[in-house]
Image (cartoon, rainbow, N blue to C red; front, side, top):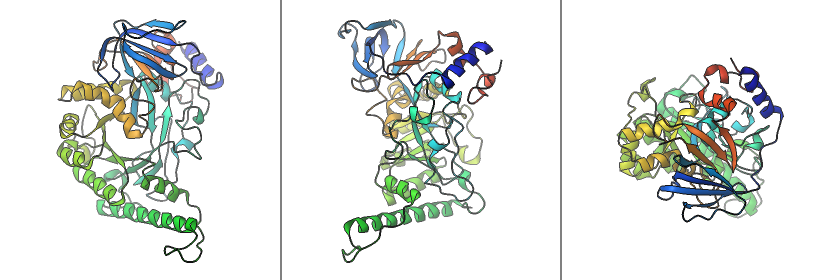
Length: 439
């Protein structure tokens, strides 16, 4: 098996370019289909062509194009490709110890796209990732939105955008609470943490005003000429945040920290997504009233640090009752990407509806990343990302049989080598880029 696995990795690392969208239509017939954006279909058909979804509906009503490859998935369950709103795959780093806020840092400059980590994600049915740096900084840098295409040789092969210089390819990672409270130059208290964030956004606002004045040909009163400020990569990224173009992905746990995020975001008008939110059940109504979505990290053993001691499996249900949007994340390695669906299963066990739980694995997360026009549901015109399960996705007994990205199969459990990505342990993955794969 070691020889076969090594050959497989070498083929990916040094071989083919990313797969192109299929030239002939493919029709998946007979499965229980969950479009997410519409009711489930007991005996459904999904037709994909050239990387896009062409048709979704009851098998008796969907016409299969002439010459299409028909895949019999009778007795199986199909979901849209899973979206993980919070991941640390690819050996990612972020800001260093020189400052507590690093808005200019891009995670895409540090991701090892050949890492075996991404095979685990595909084996878990994940097709879209938000890769973020850690929470040891108040602002650790720009996150990266990845589409887990096969055959990638460089980071650009998996980016959602076509040009990372001129387009926005991710959000902005921020954090508060104990992780970012350290010795100088980091804050030593919660109050100082918020003050440092506010000061940086005030600086960004001033930078934006100077740019606007220079473009207008004068100062704030329209008199005289004003030179534009010296280019500042960090300020440029923060202006994207303030304009709502770059979404803040905010690590926060304790109830008072959550309310601080709401308070500061309201003051400066940016869009945050609340991540982890161990105390969500305590402030569910306040979160819903603020209109903020939550990306929950559901762990088997709540706690681990003081601010997470209040974590509850009932948080998802409490947020749903309050009217807040809920997605689930792996925070991988905190939770293994192959077990992403377990979070939704646990949430249902503790009171969340099945419909919202499945949405939390797919469309809700896509919305939180601003990617829902392309992914998160099975609708004509969207990317042909889907997962074939052996049974109920919320059951611990269900297996991911196949994962498809833009009409190309990127994981097949029936293949003995690929099955090892789903069933193998630490030894399979410790090689990072594929040089050492265990036994």
